[in-house]
Image 1 (tube, rainbow, N blue to C red):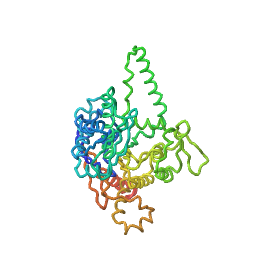
Image 2 (tube, rainbow, N blue to C red):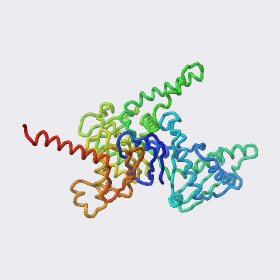
Image 3 (cartoon, rainbow, N blue to C red):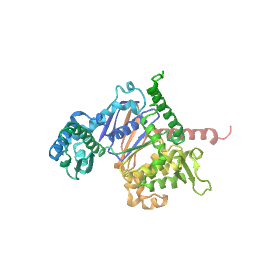
Image 4 (cartoon, helix red, strand yellow):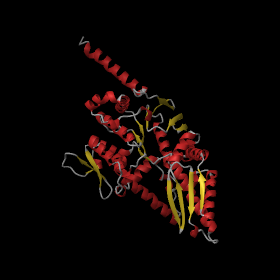
Length: 461
């Protein structure tokens, strides 16, 4: 599945392959990497919503007819056709352009010329739909609708309990309500089989846990002003003017930061990945206070429950990722990390590259936007080691590589953002080259050499 971006911020034209498990965005500043990352996040985010207005009416009507039939007879069947799914996905992705102003917290005119096109092959649709399983039930005031879709089948079965068929007085009203809710859920099941839940850690993450409480107070002030406006209708300024000040990824991150005490009740199956980050990079543990504040407990220290604003910058940078793996992560999630190297010393950037590879190998899809030469070189090492596994055992043991960290070259999609586009970089058994970073390294080495020979090797004259 590939998306084509047109006129999205600095990106005039680019095509991204979303089937890759590790997407790597590289390139100079102000070339559109964050724009592309945010847009991809929005596509996955909106695909998990069941708001019916996001779908074309003609895609809705085919399902509704089957729901009508099940209400009338007690049972019906909807055959999932490839073209139906293709239209549904394309509409979902392409209609995301209507919401870009909300995603980026700007005015609609900024994206007036933006377009998003999607390409997906029939075989991918057929395979995904074959693997889709649905077993869901809905109770509408005693009227029971059950939906069943078995693996290796292209049929969705509807069952409506005969004893709860609506009476003549409320039949039309109830039917319409049931049709809307059930059809919306079916479309969501289909879309979520292509677009899993997305989680994003924006570059602003270092400040989010520190200032989320203050920002929450500002939101409450807006709500208070709205209530005042409703009761008096005398406010001169519209309180909604300041309501959408931040892009969607930052708003979502703030929502999580404000609800940590409640969210920590969830236990993820990926605690061990949180442990990896804490043990290998942070050298300490993250915990959440009763009031929902992030705290840090350094290993081998008497200091306990250190407040986040007093902790090292690396803790501020990675605490949300630790929390995600300990409490929120589910297999197949799409994790987007803007600058995973943020506040990390070079040795920790190398460890982060290995952890990222481990995350991919545990079944997650990952997108990173990076300027780190250390992360890129270490990812290349993991590709090279994987291409020669049998010969690599000795050197892996020497440098402490774990086989769970090795990367299959076919999982990588690498893109160099420059000159208003994203150039796809080939990946082979040797990895991949990012020319913009290599050029800078080469020029720096050349300057260092020239300075040394000119000022020191010649001696004083």
